[in-house]
Length: 134
Length: 393
Ligand SMILES: [Zn+2]
Image 1 (cartoon, chains in turn purple, red):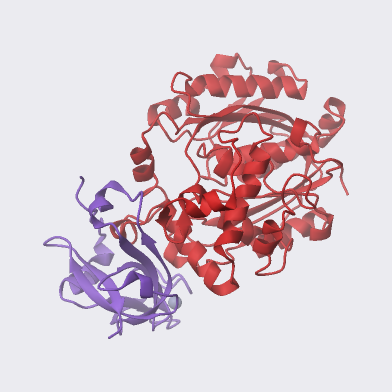
Image 2 (cartoon, chains in turn green, brown):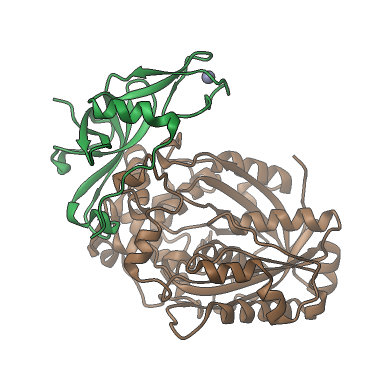
């Protein structure tokens, strides 16, 4: 079975991954139009300005949508079955893909409050993940 | 935005059976489909001046053959242009737009579009899943979380069920509707009767998606010819005219889609209806891109053919079946005809033309004048709406 995939990082996304290793969820905020931005970009997708600053997210959000994967996953995820994949909407308004961990999958629902947690996938890469708010 | 209304038409179509045919090569499918389309148009091969193959996904080397003129040589064409055009599942819609542009400006007169792929027998089932767990999925932000196409459909279906009260039974009925049409389609991969119970009793892949709600990768080949409306009238009594088109691209990474229950269809449809001078009440046929049943329900609603939240009960009531008031995806779609890659959408476009040209045999919809068609690529990144008719309103 292939190892679970690691994200190919870019120089401008390194601060995100460095923070994740330290247990912090960073997102960007535009200094010109003040919109929050995720995933990390080179330019603001709202106003086009070249002025994105890093800010620490609250780490709180809700499940926009989710799916419990029980069959036919990518090879690298075969041993993880069943697992939950979700789109989480952070309190700041931006959305991100993540797994919902430490949960009863039968109790999940859209708009359920969740909070960030972290999964060390390799020495270099820690993935932000989410679990039901406690 | 300019208008293409009534300027070009599909005059010939060709398609080989979809399914798993290990001994049948992809180039055979390409050549046969092209030959059928040229003959169907009543043209001679030397009338084609531009050939536009799309991408074959199963084998990069075969695809390079297509880019570098293999179809031209195999068929002995005398063309000025050979180029590849690919927009994933939305390729069909992009092909028509490019045809309209090239023909209305005089660059081309008769364009042959060709697709052939071997995703059914040319790759294993798991290779297919793995191919589609990275194709069109963000390597940095989504692949590490195990996103793949069943999960994409699961995520979209889950949110839509939550917002609109669409039921599992209604979703299953979409698969049954498609299958009823495929039973009348000799080119389809799956032609045995299918029931709602059978769909709901199949295993869950990515909740709430059942196995029978997932398309099956297949081998196939399809081709069509577009020419000017003026020339089309000399070739065919009932060519399929391009009457209107509209489109929106709304995301790359699925998590960035602003509304997974709507996508960009409403705005795209508004543009298409305006260009054609048609409204939802004029539509005789809904040739909607499936791949998963949720996308046909979303399209029915966003195209104004059903009210929000009512598409599921509309399909469950049988209105989209053979004999129903709004025949939908009448080749059986990717759920029943099979998913050939970019060809899945091309087969749906060809079906719209086939019906309008009166060549659909046992499943011919009587007196069909106007068809609406959708196409979308990747993780449903774009919404394309095309209006076709056998008359120009
Ligand atoms: Zn900005």
